[in-house]
Length: 143
Ligand code: NI
Image 1 (cartoon, rainbow, N blue to C red):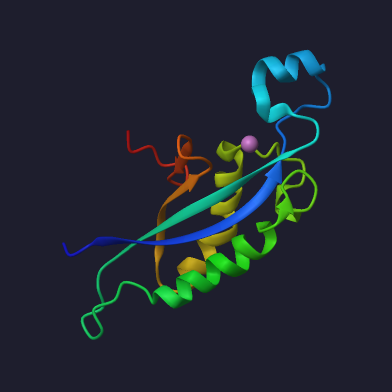
Image 2: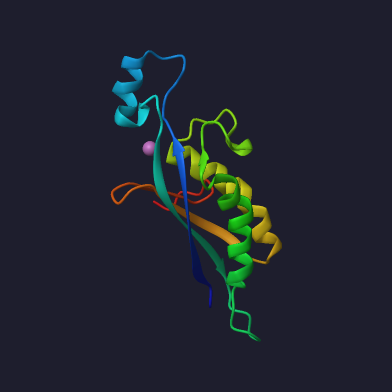
């Protein structure tokens, strides 16, 4: 098979806090550490969106990267960039915005539009800091 995997990278920044209102400050601090800081903190996020496909014999492309970029910008970057993830984002309503939860919600936003472009979303990687990132495969477990 000639299946290959192509990845588009985009960036955004956003604020959040990891904190459950029904827990005490002490418990939030114990579970989330500095990320429970009541007065918010921000990150420069980098997202990698990987699409699988077979190169089109005519043009050699799996997907037009400009189209893929436009989907990510419209569905992810626009709603999240310079926003407060706890307060400002419709698709995060009621979701505690850890990167683990965030990546699942992002997947739901872009899976179908990418299908409409003829691509199959297979992986998202979301980088929060130099040391922390999360990967999601749409519920599929490769490991
Ligand atoms: Ni954080």
